[in-house]
Amino acid sequence: MLDFKLKIPFFEAKAAYHHRREFIDEAIQKVLSNGNYINGPEVSEFASNLATYLNVEQVIPCGNGTDALCLALMALDLNPGDEVMIPSFNFIAAAEAVALLGFKPVFVEVKEDSFNVDCASLEKNMTKRTKAIIVVHLFGLSSQMEQVLAIARRNNLFVIEDVAQSLGGSYNGQKLGTLGHIGCTSFFPTKNLACFGDGGAVFTNDLGLAKKIKMLANHGQQKKYDHVYIGLNSRLDTIQAAVLNVQLPWLDELIENRRKIAVYYLQNLKGIASISLPQVDDNHTYNQFCILFKDKEMRDGLKKFLAENGVDTMVYYPLPTHLQLAFAKSGYKLGDLPVSERLCDQILALPIYPGLSTENQSLIVSLITSFTNETK
Image 1: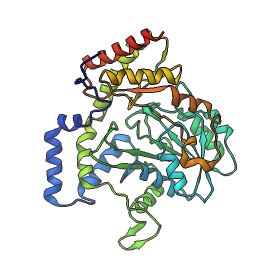
Image 2: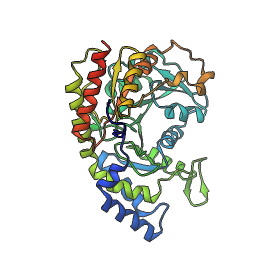
Image 3: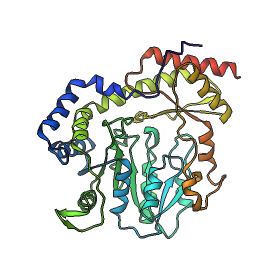
Image 4: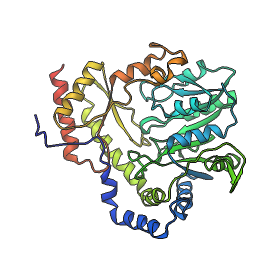
């Protein structure tokens, strides 16, 4: 056993600040001195900077990633009861947004080798009420967008991309979040592009949708006290925008640092027969690095062993969305989406973030190797 004082966190939120402290302090102090805490110039500056980075026409900053999904859905003029297909193996935010707005979430299966949407499941669950697909590029790996977009075109569906875990990644040379009708992201502190609180953004090449989303994010206003839509109060505050303006130029370097750690894990864990490793892709952003075990008992055993030796890990996700109590009235039951259900019992996410030292990477690999050798 290691010294319990040794601690390798799952994520080190303070690192981003310490590495760029001088620039971040300066940016925040400028906002405090000017007093433009809401809709200050830093917000529009960030929207422009991110639009340039993504090569997209419009970026609309907002309060958080869940709001981004709500705004995207609100802009599409869907009717109550219209169906939106969503992978069940995912964080609840996408399904939550759909249900909150009175639409029907239809949960679909994912592929075990990528954790992303299974296009066969999209085809299988299509009905006359299906109006949109929310594509989640989970853990940083792109979904098969060529197939998804082909299905959407054949069935006249909207495509919303959730790139909260994959911002900065690409598919066939195009940035994720810009292939569908609308892209959404979060700037939660654990994301590759992170602020120091809550934040989000919506992006699109459709100027009509962009105009509507801008209004929806600000109480549905087209000008002050002139409300065209029932909207939200969802603004990215100026301090968070200032932080993001500092962070954005570092995004590609931060992603590359994650990729290097992923390569180390892939190279040094590949010989362990009881572990399945994530799909290799040069465009993967590795917001998470997840491994699979043959069963829940072994997964939980390793998680406990690593914790006893000072290493934090996470289970993404312990329960698929279709089996969450919040969706108990949706009619889904255990066994409806077997791949998603099985992944929840098998998956474990390892620490992966810029600043994770090579010594700690080696230690994590050694501990996993030791555990798997003992449990053969």
